[in-house]
Amino acid sequence: MEQRTIGKFITALRKASGMTQRDLAERLGVSDKSVSRWERDEGAPDLSLIPVLAEIFGVTCDELLRGERRPPEERAAVSEEGSTLRGEKQRRRLVKAALSQYRSRVYIAAGLSLLGLIAAMIANLAFLQAILGFFLGTAFYVASAICLAIFVNRAFLSVEDAGLEEGELSQFKRQVIASARRSLGLTVTLLGFTAPLLLAGAYTGLGTEATLLLGTVCAAVFLLVYAIVWHFLTPALLRRGVYTLEAQEEAAYRHNRRLLRRCTAVLTALLLVTLLSHQAVTVIWGPWTIMEGEVFHDYDSFAACMERDIPHPDGPRGVQAVAPESVEHYYDESGQEISQEEAFRQTLEDGEGNVVCTYIKRNDSVISIQYSENEDGTLLPITVYTQDDYDRAVKKAHRRHVLFAVLCCAEIAAVAAAYRKKRVG
Image 1 (cartoon, one colour):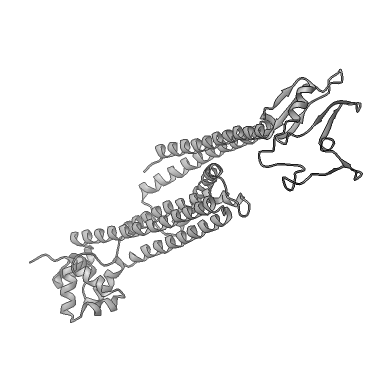
Image 2 (cartoon, rainbow, N blue to C red):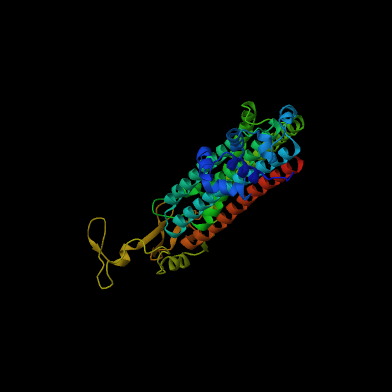
């Protein structure tokens, strides 16, 4: 007898029942194009539709999967002995197709998350709308999570009435949940990466370097919290019977959980020490403490430095003219008009109030002056710090922040590699 595929068998059963493709499609709740693809063997029905098709045509699920009817005397034996080899092969093929379709949908959810990251970065870097960028990205992340939940539910429903054995059904659900866990992990990581955008003010953006630095640290923290949540969620899924484990799988599962707890404790300790060290270094060697200024050992050199006509790098400070052609007027505390030289004159006094240095302050780039009184009453040496000195110190401190961030990432990567090396399965 000619061996039929499931598509040819559905065609024969449909014609024998006097049904059109549209009639069958309406009874199944699918399109007639789907039925046409099944009959051309360009696709196969979902596993959830196999029992429905079997009931419509008055055949068994095994006969439908095998693609042929069995003699009446063999049906009882089949029902007692289980599915035949061809039926099992067809069922595995349909399970594989359902899993492949689900994974393709998971890519859609992951794509939505990546679009959220792109939208957040465009709003931040191109339009200087960091906070708006965070909420745009979050909208995509939420949409991705919702789509993923729908896809998982559809995957479970597709095999609910497919007649799978408990082991096969459990394995299918584990694969579905594993794919969902990876996709949701990507979403959480990207959410953590865009979280620092909330630190920017309104109508301002977060710089590229700050975004990469803070984003990487926050992404690592979010991913660590996500792993901890799944660590406690997995036993809950097992207790609720969402899926089960065989004896060997359960032993590996328990070993991996113990290993994960140890690795988490080690990683937490490493990150805590690193972050506390970073905080201590930031306090002790901040920009103001590592800033290098210009040192003067006599009053004349100091006065000459302060009298240089140098504007502030961010724009002129202090009294400034309204227009180039206008004449500036200066007044003392009593309201009397004084000269520009008198308005800008400043002095240095010793501990007894004696003036030891007089100078005209025109150097607006100076942000700080440091000195201390000596035993002979002098205030030398005098250190002058400018805005450029401070900016250079900030860059040095920023490089130190980057090194600590790289160290944190290296610690996470090392612990993760150790876990993957020692885990079972």
